[in-house]
Image (cartoon, rainbow, N blue to C red; front, side):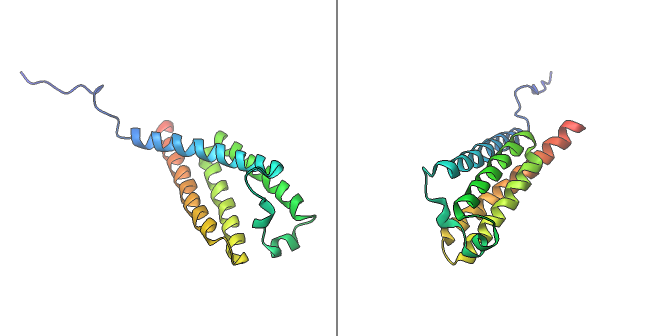
Length: 139
């Protein structure tokens, strides 16, 4: 008599991907919203110091007003990740690309730019994982 292993005891092959997706979706929802809200409070840092002079020259208003707009955009990006992680991940990645460009052109904060590059890759991974989940659930 041969016994066949129970399929209920075998882990699903996509369980790791599902956990990674949940982790990335949570972080890329919470972090942009938290950082966006902090643009209004300045508890974490003086955000204006991270605005490149050339960017400040092309945006209307003051550096403080520009950072308030940045805060709104970050909050919206976090909400988009929560609602549609496939596209929200791409939005966050593009936003991080803009932040990296801003920091590198300042000639300062290369450490922050490098960290944000890692986050950009994570946001792209979220988008890819979400696309895979969408395909699995559609078929």
